[in-house]
Length: 219
Image (cartoon, rainbow, N blue to C red; front, side):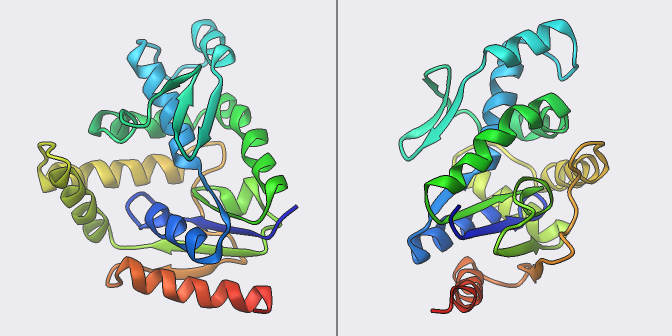
């Protein structure tokens, strides 16, 4: 098993952006777990399958083959990378990812990535459930307002219509769902390093985390 670095935290805290750059800086592999859950939610929603553990849901979940690599995010061979970052997926992903069968279906896939070299990964239960023995754990957070502002600007940059107040309300609702779900709720690992990114740039966060990880590596 490689050297594993986990980044947990709520939506909009900068986890994915920071994790990608951190992996590049350290020359580690990167696992975007959020993309895996988004891919499942996107395809379920497109096919009109509600987030209920009924027979139809379980049958469809069992037929899904999810794969992520440098070229895209694939479900049964279809690249859904361009679809999974939409406001619609933002609004439904927490409901699907809260389900035990979904989390169970992806657990082995995620853990296996650490067998292929050193790894940086981000999500909401990386340091608590998926990699509880990770070498270095971070918990990134920011105020709801700061996180909503980032997401709002991201949507406008993509040319998608957005209202800040709606994004903020959606962010708070997602926080509520993520923290209150029965299986693998969002919580800060007791042995993690807490980083508030509200007033930090991505580069500043990456610099800080890089120094900490290199110290752990003995570099």
